[in-house]
Structures are given as structure tokens and as C-alpha cells.
Amino acid sequence: MSSSSPSGSGGDDVSDRRGIAAAKFIQDVETYLSQSGFDSNSALAFHQERLQQYKVVEMKLLAQQRDLQSKIPDIEKCLEVVATLEARKGTGECLAAILMVNEYKCYLKF
Image: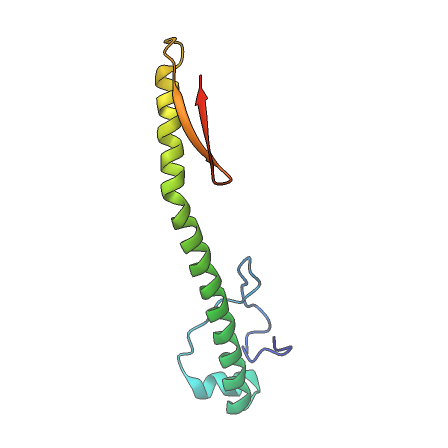
């Protein structure tokens, strides 16, 4: 991360919970550069670094989204099992289940 910020705003960048400041639209580049006190190369390097930070966060969020979406079918199956158990609760009906535990089948009756 860069220690200096050519934002020209006196450090009022609003950070999200990941610690990365929000991107701001630069309407007029010449005004931006004159107010920030940085040359064009320094400002460009700063914003390229910031872009890399955003890309890293995006990749982490996409990976997290894929992981969570892959869990949805298992969660839905668990909810179906819970609904079945709730429906049969108190009926006295016997319920048999086959569970896979460490590649072994376990037969349960309850």
C-alpha cells in the first residue's frame, strides 16, 4: 500500500470494512493533479495500485460466493430432512436413515 494518497481531499477517503478506500470519480484530471500536488506518474502509480487492491478483493469475494453457492444443495437437503423429521415427530412412526460417515454406510432406525 502506498503511504501517500494523491486524493487532494485531505484524507477524507471513506474506507469499507476491508480497509480499502472508496474510488472517487475524477472529473477534471488537470485540476485533480494540481490540487493533489502530485505529478501524473505518481498519481497514475497510486491509482494502479488501488486498482490491484480492488481486483484482489473482487477475487476473494468471488471465491467466497462460489464456496457459499456450492453449499446451498447440502443445506437444502438438510432442511428437507428436518422438515421430514418435524412432520413425523410424535406419530410413533419408525424412520430409517442411511448416512455416509467417512466412506462407510451407517444404518439408523429411530
